[in-house]
Length: 184
Image 1: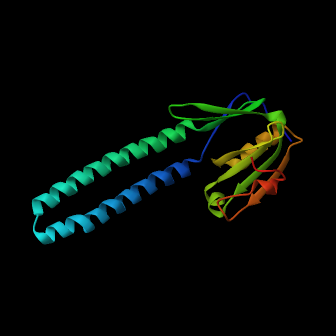
Image 2: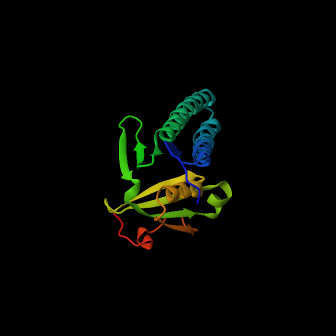
Image 3: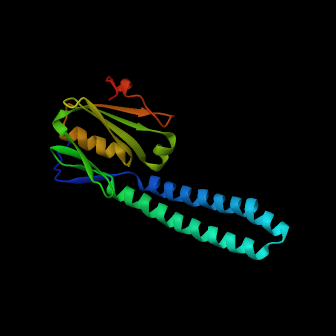
C-alpha cells in the first residue's frame, strides 16, 4: 500500500442526494398547488366566483413559491454546513446552520470501518461509512457520502490495522449489532 500524506480533507454528503432533495421539494409543492387548484379553485369556478377563485389561487401560488424558496435555501445551507473534516489525527463531524455542533473522533481509536451501499448508491457512487470508536464506544455514520470507498481506503492508509468490511444492502437502514457492537 502506498503511503499518503494528509493534511486536511473535507467530506460531504453526495451532491446527488442534495439534488434529489431539491427535486422532491419541487415535485411535492407542484402536487400541492395542482391539488389545491382542483379541490378549491375548481369548486369556486363552478359556483361562479371567478374573481375570488383567481385571487385565492394567486395568493396560494405565491405563498407556496415563497415556501419553496425557503425550503430550498434551508436544504442547501444544511448540506453546506454538515460535513466531516479528516486530518491525520482526527475526524471531526460538524453540523448546524445557526447552532454549530461538532463531534471529534481520534483516528487511532477507530477500530472498524463498514462501507454500506445500495444498488442506487453503487450506480451513483455514494455510500455510508460507519466507523466505530473503541474509546467512546460509539458509532459514527458518514451518511451517503460521495466516493465512500476512496475515503475508506484513506482511513485504512492512515491506520493500517483497521478492520474494514464492505456491504451491499438493499434496505436503507442498518443494524450496528452486525458490526459486532451495541447500538448507542
